[in-house]
Length: 453
Image (tube, rainbow, N blue to C red; front, side, top):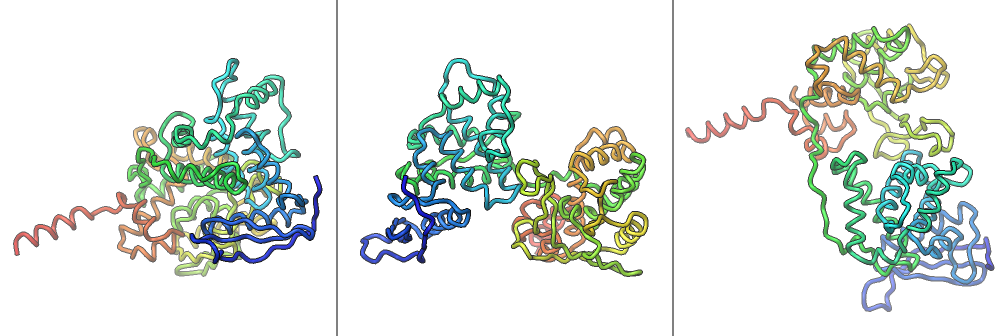
């Protein structure tokens, strides 16, 4: 294969000569000019972005087709397994750790739905492990396969459907059904399904760009899963008295772990922080006056993912705020009670070397497993047996739900609550609709007043 690293790109232009609107991507490999037309500007921009990313990674471009090595590999794929592996590896370099984990998880589920029913099929857990820990990871991060997994890999290779079979609507429907359920067979949340469908749609669009499919088959399939409410279950929301009892109970857990986390959980309740936001909170982000309200200026988060997905090799990457541009900040006013708690925490425990307030004994970030274990034990101390068996504050994240619900029920305007919580107003009202107390009584009174006038 004759290749070159001498690549130049031009801006996308609208094709004026075509009867129907189209957009042309133009580039040059060596001295050979290349072009490709797309029906929409979005498709053209996606293709050009992939090409530029490949050039940025230092990939060689084939002179004949003008495509980079990663696209050639995907284009030459004959089965979905081969194509999906090439697709994931092409997207890997410019994705965040959490996005890589989501991409791998989605493509694992999709791939398991695109298999022939061949004899000798390994159990699903083994197939999933091979895909997640080997197939969909870069070569230097792949786990070594044991004999059972090696046999499973051979079976997967032989059983994978050809990419072209995705032209059939029934094949696409099978995939949609597979990604609409959780591992335990329960229906996945709407947000989970939409995220996985978006990944699948983009992968199919990539196949269209490479000429493997004539058009994106998802655009022709009308299929929706059964609706699962994304609203917060009001049964998980604690009142202020219960919240304070739980926060106090955290300090009783363990020799030091509960005390080290005694400031982190209040940030979720009094400031409505997500756990990853609280984990990334630094002393310089906190304005803690001796009296009155304080202010948290959020900038960094520490989301947790598998080590195999992060560039640093750590389980917690440093990221910006959720669904905001990298350098965006969010100001959250905090009540005097939280100011006092954080001042006491800093005085008693200091911070990590990088300025984080909440750290393990060795200076690391508390894992989700670690702080969830502390929370479960605190519930045993603070709640009655019936409450422990109920959904009430079942997860640390429910403290955030309690905070946002409290703000809304206190009459704080929705735009202000949304800004503090880092939500859009429409998402805020949709998610917390059933946690706003008193709305039914107010509506009933207004209707009664109207009927008597």
